[in-house]
Length: 177
Image (cartoon, rainbow, N blue to C red; front, side, top):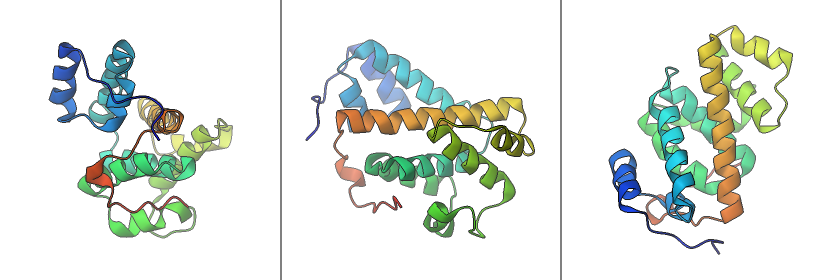
């Protein structure tokens, strides 16, 4: 059972959410219990999603890996749809839990996934950083680390609030191993 009620939004925030996301999902309605923080979250999430220069498909596989590690069915279900739309193929999605040995991933993707796991573990080693820097510049490193960190926070907030899965994504089967 969800721990906070789904809330409405003040008119200005409701308009911004509609502009950015269309109909707000349950996560935003749960966050809506604190409108100022929901507004800040919204703008930060929008920047990560739309102002980043790294490929969207790369960031979506990072987000899916974050969902797997956190065992976040909600995050997985929503981002599975986004990953597919960004061009992530089914073979890559199916192989994600075994990315280290799966032939579907190239060196850049492996570096980003290593960073994702390191951020999730709060342990980005010099070796992981060096691997990422072989493929990405400093601005891209920041983007990728922010992506992993933000979606780690998303999964933790979903868990803390026990946000219920939205009806339109309930048919997506999670691969959370």
